[in-house]
Image 1 (cartoon, rainbow, N blue to C red):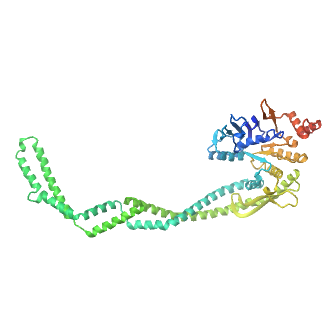
Image 2 (cartoon, rainbow, N blue to C red):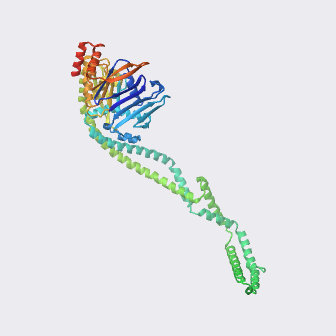
Image 3 (tube, rainbow, N blue to C red):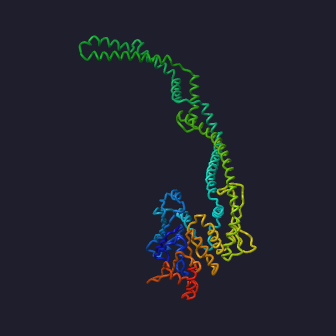
Amino acid sequence: MICGLSIRNYAIIEHLEINFSDHLTIITGETGAGKSIMLGALGLIMGKRADTKVLYDTSNKCIVEAVFNISPYALERFFEENDLDYEAETVIRREITTSGKSRAFVNDTPVRLGVLKELSNKLIDLHQQFDTLDIHDADFQMRVIDALADNKKPLKRYSKRYRAFDKNRKELERLVQLSAESNKETDFLEFQLDELLEAKLQPNEQEELEQEQKKLSNAEDIKRILGGAANHLTESENAISGQVSELLREVNTIVEFHPNLPKLVERFEGMLYELEEIANEYQGIADDTEYDGERLQIAAERLDLIYRLQTKHNVDTVEELIEIQEDLQERLQNVGDLSSKIEALENELDLQEQELLKQGEVLSTKRTKAIPKFEKKVHKLLEQLSMAHAQLKVELTNTGEINSTGVDRLRFLFAANKGSRFEEIKGVASGGELSRLALCIKSLVASAIPLPTIIFDEIDSGVSGEVALQMGDILQKLASEHQIVSITHSPQIAAKADVHYFVHKAVTSDRTITAVRELKEEERVLEIAKMLSGNPPTEYAKANARELLTR
């Protein structure tokens, strides 16, 4: 519920503050005094757009701030989802700067207008003549019937199951789409995989083949050069190893004449042994190397296959090709897994749907029983409001298909006059009829639905006397369980107030501003008397006003 509203620098409002009753707050005042301007400022809190035209003083910003007690509305999840600090006493603020820039805050955290609208719609239900009221809304209509049918607990169970069903249904849609997309490329994936599997690639294979190809391509040069080198080192007439041996013998004849020579001779001997080893290995390689044209062809063809696969898959190594092969195997496996998952999910959905159909039938049966009583009570209240021939008809159709509220489709149909055809409310009800119908419906479900603060803007337009008195009684009854704010010209309704505010114009030295004050007991008598007979009021009007207040 709304606890208080503060408005600064908005239209002809310089500054005003108003605190609301937990029950019925009545606002009265002369035409043009600023009641609609107050609603305009409240509209900023509800997320409506504004510009610099709203500024009372163009050199200062406009600030509209409302304090709400939100503890009855179970909004913790909304605050969490929108990263807002949850406070039982929540402050919503709108600021319009001198440049026309608008900012919105919830508990001092900046928010987008979309978030503000969503939150304020949960907190304020603003009814104005000819506006679209929520009694048009199919979800609200279903909530009304479920409240009267005492469907709270079974609907809670159904909703929990439906959310699980809907989640699975969306997952099934995703998997089916994914499967369809996968099936389109399955043949191509299988072709690619078969090609790689047929290649039987091995790690390090490319390097080994390239080395083998080089060896075979140069076999004659390898054999000739290495054989010649081995011969020159150890076998020829002037072999290097023979020359080294001769030099070594000569040095040995003087080795004892210098202390450094033994180590040098030792190194020289090692060189001789190394030359002989090298010659042996050269000769071994030469002996083992034979040109094999067939093997060279095989290596060349194998490398050609590897290079072609690398080019096709845009990679540089065999190892990367093996990774692609493994990825293709996994993707094809997943396609197979999708089919299994889809089948399992379809079976689960069938079971969930059957259970939901059973629970939906229970809800439908209880709704069917509640509707005649509801229609009868609405008609009785409409009679009280001078709409004796108006009737509301609730059309409940069991579709046999599950939805978020069961298996039913529901519509409120309305006939304003005797013999009129029943049609949807929005198309046939006038603004005054809509307001009275909304008042009747909400008064019947007040104890069952946690309604937000309801603000009625002149719903009494066009009614007076006994009808206005009856409307006041219904408002008062509704206000016993919900917070109601009513802007009215009706003295009969004004007399029902728990708190009564009077909006008036005040003239300063340089301009006219809107002011508001809470009326005390005698001030209320005088104001209601003026509403009855004009200003100044007659003594009879004052007496009548006192009677209305004590009734």
